[in-house]
Structure formats: C-alpha cells, structure tokens
Image 1: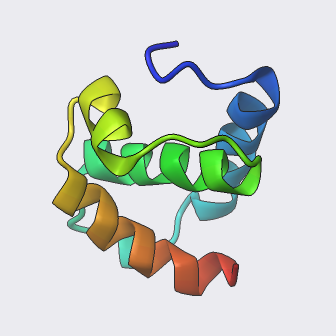
Image 2 (image 1 turned 180 degrees about the vertical axis):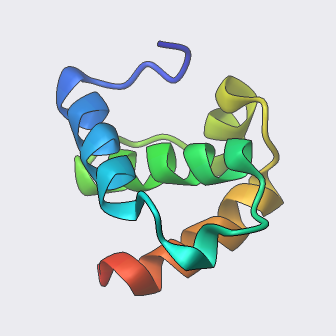
Length: 79
C-alpha cells in the first residue's frame, strides 16, 4: 500500500466505499479523486496522521481534488 495505512484503515476504506456505492452525488466526479478522498477520510477516522499532499502523491491525485471531495463526503458521513 503506497499510503502506508494500517489494516484497520484499509478495512474502513472498503467500508466507506461500500456505503457510497450508487450514490447520485458521485456522478461526474473523478474516480481517482473520490478514491483518494475516501482513503484520506479513513485515515482520519482511524487516527492515522497523513497529510492530503501525502495521500495525493500515493493516489496520483492532487490535494485540491482530495479537499473538494473530502468536504462533500464530510457532510455525507457526518463526522
């Protein structure tokens, strides 16, 4: 795993992906940005300290793309 996430965080990432499956607000969003934001959110939930730029590099995305998706998902996941 390029991010260096724990097994717990990987499991949380899969769980969050499952929760988002089929959600209409994902239409038109870059799948890489969505995946990177989900990884970043899982890292936060599991208490791992990784920065948006570090996740962006690992996921081949950009920090602004992660940030934009993060704020959209933050409302959805209510955390």
